[in-house]
Image 1 (tube, one colour):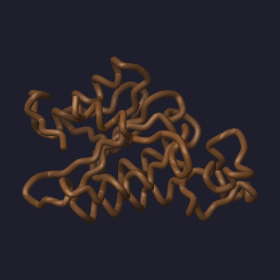
Image 2: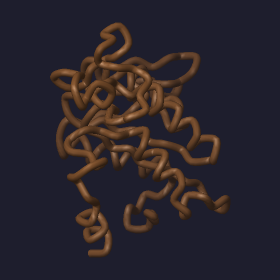
Image 3: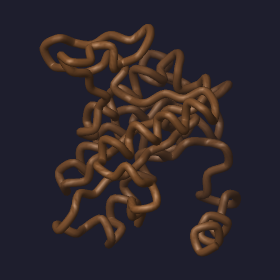
Image 4: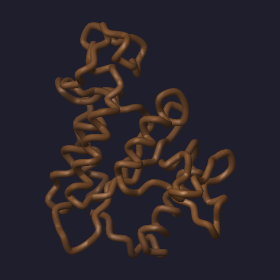
Amino acid sequence: NQIQAVIQGIPNSGPGQPSGGTPTSLSLNFVGNVGELQTKDRQDFILLLTDGLPNCNPDNPYEGSNNDTCRCTINRCQGDYTRLGCLDKDASVTAVNALGQKGIQTIVIGFGAETASGAGPETLNAMAQAGGFARKCTDENPNACGAGDTCDPVTKLCGRAFYQAANQTELSAALESIINLVGSRDICLLELA
């Protein structure tokens, strides 16, 4: 009930609030400063579950008026969305790197079609690789990456470094894989802060 109350208390409209966009870099910067993630006595993780590409950064150096640099994530990157609609990949990867420097790993899950095509895989791959929790394979299980994905024989990393889910079943499987890698087989014993 407490978690539900916090989620419902997050403002989702009004000036400066997201209204359907994906303010990934700003959100990661905020969460990275939460006191519970500043401890050195345990492993700290951020689970980034996103159904969209990062945007909504008013400080994005790219503008919709420059089609060579702005990779527009919405219908049109103009007017109020000249910067806000542009892909915010660089700042998002920088935010994940900053978390890593604090000893916080970032686990990336893409959910839905937008993260599975276009600029989605490239962007989420970069964040997953920077997050220190990229999907891996082993000599014992070179097929661990799944159908249609590759296993680099040298780095032992999957071609798709992030977890991808298109539905509830795939999301449950991704979360179960992550929990098993974190170390607890019993999800009831994994403390979430």
